[in-house]
Length: 119
Image (cartoon, rainbow, N blue to C red; front, side, top):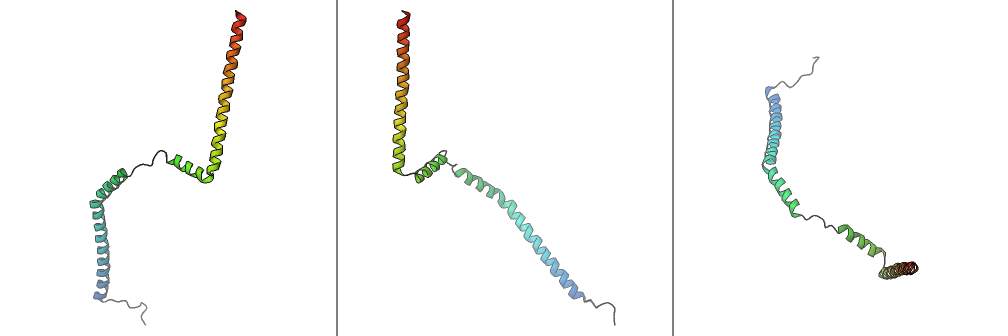
């Protein structure tokens, strides 16, 4: 009874496995080399195409945020509510105009009274 198990000592069995391993490693290396060659040859063209595409694409419009805000506003409020709000703003504007006009008129009236008192 041998102490060590018999190994396949046939020269063809071991060399076939080694040559298969070497062939698979060689194929992997050749594939990697081809991939790197493709990368080196085609990457400048890909980069140039990406730059051209980026140059062709227009930047977003400046008023895009305003349009989105306006669209969301109109979605939230109905046309009647918007008309009522505009009417209130117009009335408020008219009242502010009257207030400023009255202030100017009173200031002018005070100025005239002071002028008459001095003379």
